[in-house]
Picture 1 (cartoon, helix red, strand yellow):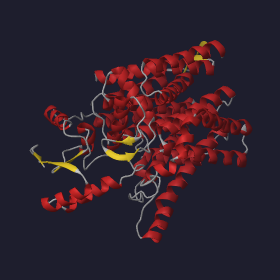
Picture 2 (picture 1 turned 120 degrees about the vertical axis):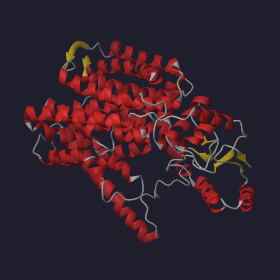
Picture 3 (picture 1 turned 135 degrees about the horizontal axis):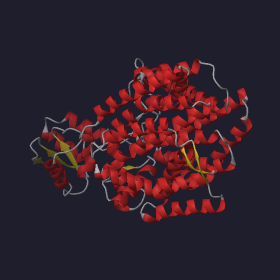
Picture 4 (picture 1 turned 90 degrees about the horizontal axis):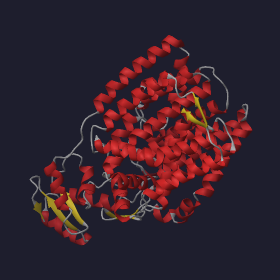
Length: 546
């Protein structure tokens, strides 16, 4: 627990506090939920950007953030010290209870769960060791890196400052990202529907009752980039409720940082923005011109401010995408259980909120555009694209990970569901929040389990690091959590975690090779000689069999 607490304090001191001071100058109010939420997101976005630009940086990155906050106070104006709704006790109870529940899980283990966390650890460790953004996956795979590395640079920066391991940092980051997302859903529910109860119910639905796209899901597979991208987009949506030039500058930074964190999240954000714009042009609610101007001002700021990243990336995107399975993603269609995947309570409450007559403003239109764009995108990729692929090639596959399109439905469903619950009246709302908080505590308690490796096993993996570079490690009987072997041994393995955006062909070919000749050592050695591979087979008792 001490390591996670040190990482959290480092994050708050290095990114959270200067971001909050900067947001308070932009908002004109020091103590408010809006300043706290926007500040945490702005600090994260700026720290991600600066650590990506200077991946070897340490204290100077935090110093630049404090300097930006001081400049905002000097030139934009000092914020008011009056509270802006930050002292109401129901919010502190709900958000405080959620923080206690999530910290209970985060502090229970030094090692995060999830296959994705293993490859995030590899990229972040490479940045930490080299002090620069990685261009390949060596020594794990001799392939180029397609995956965006903004979040990995942030992880390396926090690891350097806190002197904690990369896995501990990744485990801890779930906490501020999820608390920020819950606070954003509360503010959106409150401001869109003009009712604090709608915000409280939205936070309870998202924090305690959801499944995919919530802490329960992200912490189980390690989806930190998706998690960060959705949180930043939620804050962008909060800014759009009061569109102005200052907000457009902040929104552009948030939007650009989404691209540094996760390409698919930035693609989905762009699609949602297009759908919001079309909805504004069609329905023309009050203030639609200012809202439309705000959204595309954010896009312009993001394109200009982050040109250093997207122009070089696009210039060689075709070369990088070779071998990627982004357009040939072989997974199973979510045909039967999409509701249970998202959670019955969010789906039923969200559907009720969608059908109920409510305020018609730019914000509610944006939330509905988010919901419908992701719904039809998931249907198109998971069924239409898959059906066409099967008809054309004889193999059923999808594209752009359709499950992620369902994952980020949790946010609009929580906001819409919060409005539906608020219509139950004061007693109904209080009963729902109380039951949700109790149910949520039980679910978090079930997740709070230590995930660790025995000391002798870690010592054995450390010894394997002394083998010659690029030696393939083939475990005759893969141990539990085999996806961590590549990170722990710093060698290629048959279970090396390579994401779908990368060229997986060499890794797949090796796995097929060992599967085909596992019982015939002579044929296996002959084929490996043809592949120019140096390998070591590791017996279940730990002996090295060459």
